[in-house]
Image (cartoon, rainbow, N blue to C red; front, side):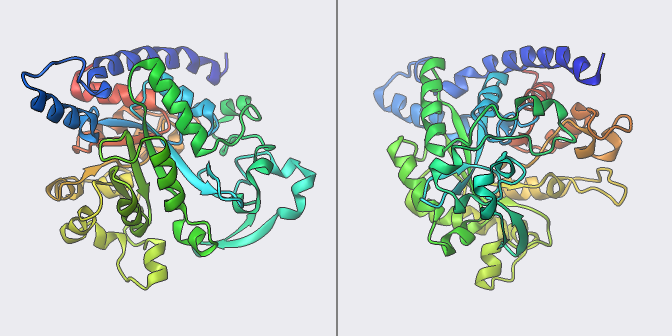
Amino acid sequence: MTQGERRIPARRTVLGAAGATVLGASTALTGGAAQAAPDTAGAASAAAGRDRGYRSLPVPTVIAHRGASGYRPEHTLGSYRHALGLGAHVIEQDLVPTRDGHLVCRHENDITGTTDVADHPEFASRRTTKSVDGVSLTGWFTEDFTLAELKTLRAEERIPAVRQENTLYDGRWTIPTFEEVLRWAEEEGRRRGRRIWLHVETKHPTYFRSLGLGLEERLARLLRRYGRDRADSPVFLQSFEPTSVRRLAELVDPPGVVLLSGPTSRPWDFVEAGDPRTVADLVTPEGLRWIASFAKGIGPSLDLVIPKDASGRLGDPTTLVRDAHRAGLILHPYTHRNENSFLPVEFRRGTDPAAYGDSFGALRRYLATGIDGIFSDNPDTALLGAADLTGRD
């Protein structure tokens, strides 16, 4: 029996337990109005407003990172469906534009490693080299294709050396538009009797604005069209560029989340504007208060919550959780994954980088810091880890 075969029963076990966890939290996700009738109409209205907002989500919230990308090629309807079936509370989409202005779901505009574009001779001449946020990349890019052309491509696993089982699904799905995802979420919401939460990221917004393909206005139009433009709508709007989150806050009302990478890095919009601040400046109490003036949360890397030492082992937690909560911000750190290659050294098991390590042990350390949620490629694992913490299983 291969290692992959050994994992199959474990996944089924996790799925069943994760489903039970989500059912236990279902009243929070449905909005609560039908479950409890307050004494007065005014109280009912106030309760509905509270229950339908992001504060109603279970804590810790499990966000399916690019869908269930630990099990299916990322940012496909198959990955999103599987994440919902596993019980994820929220499902993430990353947005990039096509040449004709449609928003599609890809982690990067460079689609070389996530589609079969290299196998299409008709697009061979589209291969090019570009500088995106100061990084030179050679490949094929969404902004050089119309939507109709992109729809002739098929999605593939991004890291096949680590996730060989996911390659089984190569070629099964096309690149989804964000509008297709919104329609899918509506249909699933009606079928399941609850709202389907999305976590939507604008990718490289300054770069795309320079090409005349501004993301925020296009995203805001779609959110209005599908009734997800209100403060209590089931959607988070996130970006590594704070000005993109601020621009979205001027257009629509859902909660914004500023993503934060390494402490010495600078958001690309800061680089372009000559703003000298780094992520280290943004995670100070002063920086967090500034973020709170236009956003509701932050999405820090897990290393900003618990740094690793030189050997790759977890050290002591920083004060980020405390400081962000004092500023009124929630924290949705990224990214939890099951494989050894992504885990802190002390939670790795064996020498195979693609094998699963002690993912639950790592989750206990991260969740114990008081974070409000976590992005995970393996949402069923994260749900069980959350259940271990809360006793909701």
